[in-house]
Length: 121
Image (cartoon, rainbow, N blue to C red; front, side):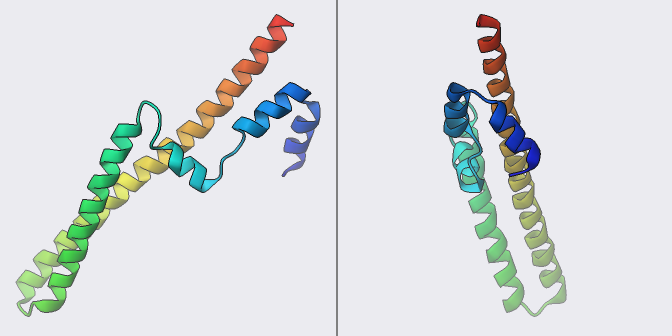
């Protein structure tokens, strides 16, 4: 925990500390699991299934390279494997960006809650 984080925690009230512990940082596995909930959950599940299919096809293409002797066919299957791995990586990048957006939205909502409480008090 950085010095700034410690200063913020010291400034929080009891109720805010309890909220921070409940909705604080989740870690990598918690953020990944959160991708599959909420409004975008169904889309992330679908894109993960597509990613698995792309992985299987890329492995098939890579294995095909090892069994062929014709250089033209080896190049074609090699290009196919690279394109499939790149498509899989693009989906993974989208998921990472969504995880980052979820973290930022959670922090903004927490700030909104604190401002609403301060205004009500």
